[in-house]
Length: 337
Image (tube, rainbow, N blue to C red; front, side, top):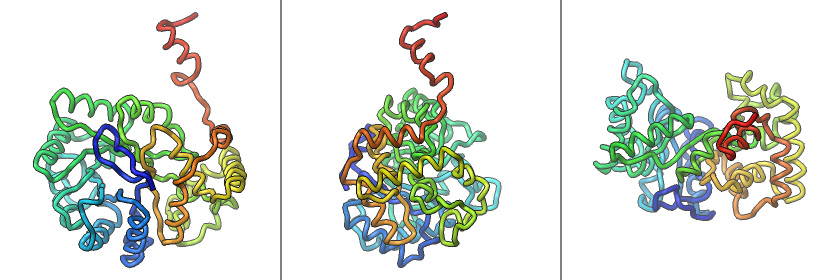
């Protein structure tokens, strides 16, 4: 793996980030530690978790592993926002919930600081100023090194950014969006904003829940237990991947993978890495075999021709205000007849 500058900060992270949502769910503690060991032994230093993953078990597993690691050599990212207790203030981005969440995460992770604390998603109830005043205090007090955002819309991220700038507070430096070859609407607003503001981008679900590996090309009905789809109670959601566009994407990926002597997962990850807006895709694994395959997504480059083939197969319908007419109007600086 290569090291990359993390947005507009001076921190360096590996070009792949290890996602740990499977820890305590599809991977037990021993398996999880094997995954962590292999990832770091192969040059990875960037690990992403969240307090809500397996209701804290993911953080706890990482914390046990951290006891025998050089903590300063690692970049540990976690998140707060979702419900971790039943009482009224057990959810959200209020000062009360954030402070409690960070305290709990620090204890589970066996560390005295978090490298990257991310807001897991927007909270319409809590004033933005309350949230970011609290986060700024955490950075100033040394509990958090950097602030990140996950699952915000572009206008929400920009609103937070401008608030911090107006107050002289520590700004959010990263964005964790849903982005892969299937989910490309992220390219309309979020990625251009990130490039304009020099924000680090960590796409989650780079393999679209396993669909981009090709293992569901026969349909989701027969998905086995132990897979993301087989264990999901939201099978209706995944039926979007049985469309004509989805089948065209899988067919194209198969051909590109065969041509490059790579797996479809490796091609899908490399496609993300070739995007200049992307810093570190978040790769997840429930076993060592999956991790080894995913790590093969870096260290080589898809050709421009192969990227074009994949882009053409996965292209979304572009409508106003993202179509060519709108772009022409913006360049002209006026509305044409």
